[in-house]
Amino acid sequence: MENLISRITINPEICHGKPTVRNMRWPVEVILDMLGSGMEINEILDDHPELEKEDILASIYYAKLSISGNVLKKVS
Image (cartoon, rainbow, N blue to C red; front, side):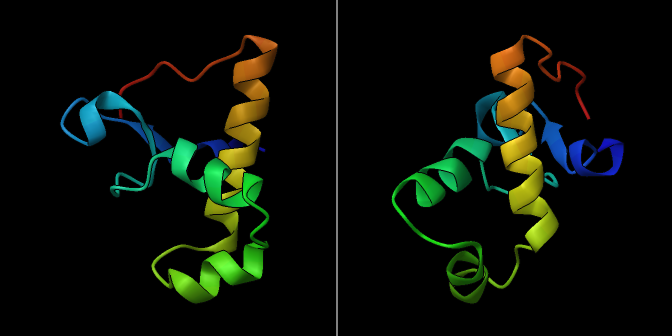
């Protein structure tokens, strides 16, 4: 799981310091919103080819860590 979480970055210069995928302007919350709206992983990847399956899985894992109180706080 460490490989997945390394895909999530927090950089004050990108998206106001929100957790993002690989320092791109893809906040974790947007990925989760797409999944929550019913989009499947393959649909997201088809619509946004710059994303990889592992990015989506990392976003889900980050959410799980956040809920459990183990939030990523390191600035990358």
